Image 1 (spheres, rainbow, N blue to C red):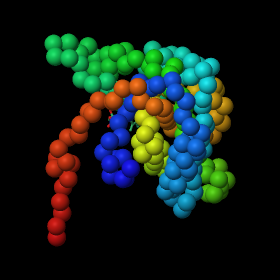
Image 2 (tube, protein in one colour):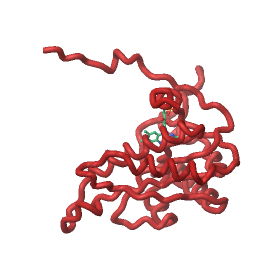
Image 3 (spheres, rainbow, N blue to C red):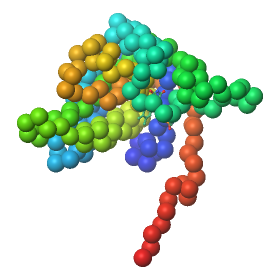
Image 4 (cartoon, helix red, strand yellow):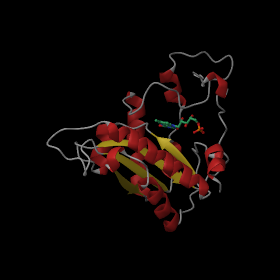
Length: 208
Ligand SMILES: Cc1cc2nc3c(=O)[nH]c(=O)nc-3n(C[C@H](O)[C@H](O)[C@H](O)COP(=O)(O)O)c2cc1C
Protein backbone atom coordinates (compact mmCIF):
# COMPACT_ATOMS: atom_id res chain seq x y z
CA UNK A 1 0.00 0.00 0.00
CA UNK A 2 1.21 3.46 -0.93
CA UNK A 3 2.05 5.69 2.06
CA UNK A 4 -0.53 8.33 1.14
CA UNK A 5 -3.21 5.68 0.86
CA UNK A 6 -2.28 4.39 4.33
CA UNK A 7 -2.46 7.92 5.73
CA UNK A 8 -5.86 8.58 4.16
CA UNK A 9 -7.45 5.20 4.93
CA UNK A 10 -6.19 4.77 8.52
CA UNK A 11 -9.08 4.99 10.96
CA UNK A 12 -9.49 4.48 14.68
CA UNK A 13 -10.93 0.98 15.11
CA UNK A 14 -12.89 -0.03 18.20
CA UNK A 15 -14.28 -3.38 17.06
CA UNK A 16 -11.91 -6.25 16.40
CA UNK A 17 -12.15 -9.86 15.26
CA UNK A 18 -10.82 -12.46 17.67
CA UNK A 19 -8.48 -13.69 14.93
CA UNK A 20 -4.80 -13.72 15.96
CA UNK A 21 -2.37 -11.33 14.30
CA UNK A 22 0.54 -13.07 12.55
CA UNK A 23 3.82 -12.73 14.53
CA UNK A 24 5.63 -11.47 11.36
CA UNK A 25 3.16 -8.59 11.19
CA UNK A 26 3.70 -7.72 14.84
CA UNK A 27 7.45 -7.82 14.23
CA UNK A 28 7.14 -5.53 11.18
CA UNK A 29 5.00 -3.07 13.16
CA UNK A 30 7.48 -2.93 16.05
CA UNK A 31 10.31 -2.39 13.56
CA UNK A 32 8.41 0.50 11.94
CA UNK A 33 7.80 1.96 15.40
CA UNK A 34 11.48 1.80 16.28
CA UNK A 35 12.45 3.73 13.12
CA UNK A 36 10.68 6.86 14.37
CA UNK A 37 12.75 10.03 14.65
CA UNK A 38 13.96 11.34 18.03
CA UNK A 39 16.16 14.22 19.21
CA UNK A 40 19.83 13.28 18.65
CA UNK A 41 18.60 9.76 17.89
CA UNK A 42 18.01 9.28 21.62
CA UNK A 43 15.27 6.66 20.98
CA UNK A 44 13.50 7.41 24.27
CA UNK A 45 10.95 4.60 24.05
CA UNK A 46 10.28 1.02 25.03
CA UNK A 47 7.49 -1.31 24.02
CA UNK A 48 5.38 -3.74 26.02
CA UNK A 49 3.68 -6.37 23.91
CA UNK A 50 0.46 -7.42 25.60
CA UNK A 51 -1.43 -10.46 24.32
CA UNK A 52 -3.58 -13.08 25.99
CA UNK A 53 -7.01 -13.31 27.51
CA UNK A 54 -6.10 -12.54 31.13
CA UNK A 55 -4.14 -9.36 30.34
CA UNK A 56 -6.90 -8.10 28.04
CA UNK A 57 -9.51 -8.61 30.72
CA UNK A 58 -7.37 -6.89 33.34
CA UNK A 59 -6.70 -3.93 31.04
CA UNK A 60 -10.43 -3.70 30.44
CA UNK A 61 -11.18 -3.73 34.20
CA UNK A 62 -8.52 -1.15 34.98
CA UNK A 63 -9.69 1.11 32.15
CA UNK A 64 -13.28 0.84 33.41
CA UNK A 65 -12.02 1.92 36.82
CA UNK A 66 -10.21 4.90 35.27
CA UNK A 67 -13.30 5.81 33.28
CA UNK A 68 -15.47 5.79 36.42
CA UNK A 69 -13.12 8.07 38.35
CA UNK A 70 -12.34 10.23 35.29
CA UNK A 71 -8.63 9.99 36.17
CA UNK A 72 -7.42 9.23 32.68
CA UNK A 73 -4.17 9.87 30.88
CA UNK A 74 -5.44 12.25 28.20
CA UNK A 75 -8.39 14.52 28.92
CA UNK A 76 -10.06 17.40 27.23
CA UNK A 77 -11.81 15.80 24.30
CA UNK A 78 -14.66 13.44 23.56
CA UNK A 79 -14.00 9.95 22.23
CA UNK A 80 -17.46 9.56 20.82
CA UNK A 81 -19.19 11.23 17.94
CA UNK A 82 -21.42 14.21 18.81
CA UNK A 83 -24.64 13.36 20.66
CA UNK A 84 -27.70 12.79 18.46
CA UNK A 85 -29.87 15.85 17.92
CA UNK A 86 -32.25 16.54 20.79
CA UNK A 87 -30.11 14.75 23.37
CA UNK A 88 -29.13 17.34 25.91
CA UNK A 89 -25.49 17.51 26.82
CA UNK A 90 -25.23 17.44 30.62
CA UNK A 91 -21.63 18.26 31.17
CA UNK A 92 -19.69 17.63 28.02
CA UNK A 93 -16.73 15.42 28.60
CA UNK A 94 -18.20 13.42 31.50
CA UNK A 95 -21.25 12.44 29.47
CA UNK A 96 -19.11 11.44 26.51
CA UNK A 97 -16.94 9.38 28.81
CA UNK A 98 -19.93 7.53 30.27
CA UNK A 99 -21.32 6.71 26.83
CA UNK A 100 -18.00 5.37 25.60
CA UNK A 101 -17.91 1.58 25.83
CA UNK A 102 -14.62 -0.11 26.60
CA UNK A 103 -15.95 -3.61 25.93
CA UNK A 104 -13.85 -3.85 22.75
CA UNK A 105 -10.72 -4.10 24.94
CA UNK A 106 -11.72 -7.66 25.86
CA UNK A 107 -11.34 -8.60 22.18
CA UNK A 108 -8.15 -6.86 21.05
CA UNK A 109 -5.60 -9.50 19.98
CA UNK A 110 -2.51 -7.30 20.41
CA UNK A 111 -1.89 -4.23 22.54
CA UNK A 112 1.42 -2.39 22.34
CA UNK A 113 2.24 -0.28 25.39
CA UNK A 114 4.41 2.65 24.30
CA UNK A 115 6.59 3.73 27.20
CA UNK A 116 8.48 7.04 27.09
CA UNK A 117 11.86 7.48 28.77
CA UNK A 118 12.34 10.94 30.31
CA UNK A 119 16.01 10.02 30.77
CA UNK A 120 16.90 8.28 27.54
CA UNK A 121 19.53 5.53 27.39
CA UNK A 122 21.75 7.64 25.11
CA UNK A 123 21.33 10.95 26.93
CA UNK A 124 21.96 9.95 30.51
CA UNK A 125 23.33 12.95 32.39
CA UNK A 126 22.73 12.66 36.14
CA UNK A 127 19.11 13.02 37.09
CA UNK A 128 18.22 15.47 34.33
CA UNK A 129 15.01 14.58 32.54
CA UNK A 130 13.68 15.69 29.15
CA UNK A 131 10.14 15.87 27.87
CA UNK A 132 11.26 15.34 24.27
CA UNK A 133 10.27 11.68 24.63
CA UNK A 134 6.64 12.78 24.26
CA UNK A 135 7.20 14.04 20.72
CA UNK A 136 9.23 10.97 19.80
CA UNK A 137 6.55 8.65 21.19
CA UNK A 138 3.95 10.50 19.09
CA UNK A 139 6.02 9.70 16.00
CA UNK A 140 6.41 6.10 17.18
CA UNK A 141 2.67 5.73 17.61
CA UNK A 142 1.86 7.17 14.17
CA UNK A 143 4.36 4.74 12.63
CA UNK A 144 2.56 1.89 14.39
CA UNK A 145 -0.85 3.04 13.15
CA UNK A 146 0.32 3.46 9.56
CA UNK A 147 2.24 0.18 9.49
CA UNK A 148 -0.82 -1.63 10.84
CA UNK A 149 -2.99 -0.02 8.15
CA UNK A 150 -0.51 -1.01 5.41
CA UNK A 151 -0.68 -4.60 6.67
CA UNK A 152 -4.48 -4.70 6.51
CA UNK A 153 -4.94 -4.32 10.27
CA UNK A 154 -7.06 -1.95 12.32
CA UNK A 155 -5.59 0.04 15.19
CA UNK A 156 -6.45 2.49 17.94
CA UNK A 157 -4.38 5.03 19.86
CA UNK A 158 -5.80 4.47 23.36
CA UNK A 159 -5.20 6.69 26.39
CA UNK A 160 -8.23 6.15 28.57
CA UNK A 161 -6.24 4.62 31.38
CA UNK A 162 -4.87 5.66 34.71
CA UNK A 163 -1.08 5.97 34.74
CA UNK A 164 -0.61 4.62 38.29
CA UNK A 165 -2.94 1.66 37.90
CA UNK A 166 -1.41 0.57 34.60
CA UNK A 167 2.15 1.13 35.73
CA UNK A 168 1.55 -1.37 38.48
CA UNK A 169 -0.09 -3.92 36.22
CA UNK A 170 2.41 -3.63 33.34
CA UNK A 171 5.45 -3.27 35.59
CA UNK A 172 6.50 0.16 34.30
CA UNK A 173 9.18 1.79 36.44
CA UNK A 174 8.07 5.11 38.08
CA UNK A 175 10.88 6.89 36.20
CA UNK A 176 9.18 6.01 32.91
CA UNK A 177 5.88 7.16 31.41
CA UNK A 178 3.25 4.97 29.76
CA UNK A 179 2.29 7.26 26.87
CA UNK A 180 -0.30 5.10 25.11
CA UNK A 181 -1.69 1.67 24.53
CA UNK A 182 -2.01 0.92 20.84
CA UNK A 183 -4.69 -1.67 20.08
CA UNK A 184 -4.15 -3.77 16.97
CA UNK A 185 -6.21 -6.47 15.28
CA UNK A 186 -8.27 -7.37 12.27
CA UNK A 187 -11.22 -4.97 12.15
CA UNK A 188 -14.63 -6.60 12.59
CA UNK A 189 -16.42 -3.70 10.88
CA UNK A 190 -15.23 -0.73 8.87
CA UNK A 191 -14.63 2.23 11.16
CA UNK A 192 -16.57 5.46 10.64
CA UNK A 193 -14.78 8.28 8.88
CA UNK A 194 -15.02 11.27 11.22
CA UNK A 195 -13.80 13.60 8.47
CA UNK A 196 -11.62 16.64 8.92
CA UNK A 197 -12.20 20.38 8.97
CA UNK A 198 -11.53 22.05 5.62
CA UNK A 199 -7.78 22.21 5.12
CA UNK A 200 -7.90 25.88 4.22
CA UNK A 201 -9.10 26.69 7.77
CA UNK A 202 -5.81 25.27 9.06
CA UNK A 203 -3.32 26.81 6.67
CA UNK A 204 -1.99 30.34 6.86
CA UNK A 205 0.33 31.47 4.13
CA UNK A 206 3.22 33.82 4.62
CA UNK A 207 4.73 34.87 1.34
CA UNK A 208 7.37 37.53 1.74
C1 LIG B 1 -3.39 11.53 21.97
C2 LIG B 1 -4.58 10.71 21.49
C3 LIG B 1 -5.30 9.98 22.41
C4 LIG B 1 -6.40 9.20 22.00
N1 LIG B 1 -7.04 8.43 22.92
C5 LIG B 1 -8.09 7.70 22.53
C6 LIG B 1 -8.77 6.84 23.47
O1 LIG B 1 -8.39 6.72 24.62
N2 LIG B 1 -9.84 6.16 23.03
C7 LIG B 1 -10.27 6.22 21.73
O2 LIG B 1 -11.26 5.56 21.39
N3 LIG B 1 -9.64 6.99 20.81
C8 LIG B 1 -8.56 7.71 21.18
N4 LIG B 1 -7.88 8.45 20.25
C9 LIG B 1 -8.30 8.39 18.83
C10 LIG B 1 -9.08 9.62 18.40
O3 LIG B 1 -10.33 9.64 19.05
C11 LIG B 1 -9.23 9.59 16.86
O4 LIG B 1 -7.96 9.65 16.29
C12 LIG B 1 -10.06 10.76 16.35
O5 LIG B 1 -11.39 10.66 16.77
C13 LIG B 1 -10.04 10.83 14.81
O6 LIG B 1 -10.53 9.64 14.24
P1 LIG B 1 -9.65 8.80 13.23
O7 LIG B 1 -8.42 8.33 14.00
O8 LIG B 1 -10.51 7.63 12.80
O9 LIG B 1 -9.26 9.68 12.09
C14 LIG B 1 -6.77 9.20 20.63
C15 LIG B 1 -6.03 9.93 19.70
C16 LIG B 1 -4.94 10.66 20.11
C17 LIG B 1 -4.10 11.41 19.08
